[in-house]
Length: 345
Image (tube, rainbow, N blue to C red; front, side):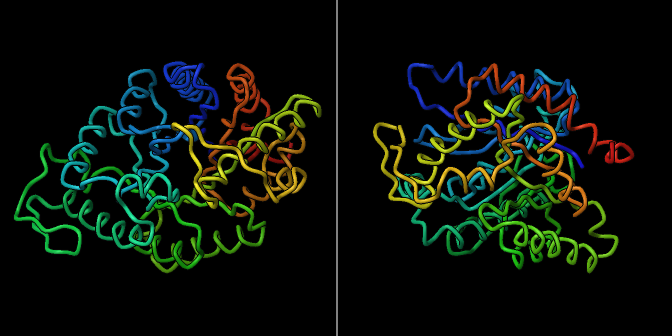
């Protein structure tokens, strides 16, 4: 089982500065490259200070210039916000500049505030995403493409430069529903998922859907992978663990506002709102724990056959503490799972 770091930019204080936020993210990417992580992932969000990254492909190129081997995943790019005729070319250029290390994670968009202020009604995101994905794949795979659909109509054109890999970089589909996981896997996509508050049985159902699809595909599905995204932080003490849980709870008071709540944003800053979930219940659903607890919580993922766990440690903690926690994870936890012979140590 491999591990990735989600470089999710949290920006609770404007005085800190966006330049420092992205410097912290780049430092984590360099650490990941040097410490044996398989990948880093970059989200896409606009107009808000939570998961703040309006230019993931640009940042992917920056990361590639400062690292040597690590994969760089967009997790995820919101396709309905882009014109695929322009975006396909940007993807090709980013794949060239990252020297073939790009993994293109895609999704439909989840924050109503963000989507609708950029002119995409939430009730259209599914249809727009489906057509955008089909257009993108065609533009990357075929030399000349014309289209006559609901959202795209254009005469024959060719994306230049042409992809350095047939069909462009591998596509990773963000999907939670087990049925959706099955069908996306059948289409040849890698999968990124999370159970959120769905619990272990939800995760089992997600994994089973992925494995069933791969089995039905035979050799064609052999190299497809399943990534699991989890908020995680390796605490050195019980006291630090409780402090990190409190920070995560404050983070979710803002995250919930734009994910499932009313979307109250003041000059780019998401307003924290009271939560109905208790801090104790939230802690149960996250991987914020000390070393032995972390090993116990990760072991079922390895047993299920998950290929990659994406750790999301950026929820308002001090950057130096986060850096130290990631270093400790790479030394004290990760080897038990990246080297299966040592998993019982």
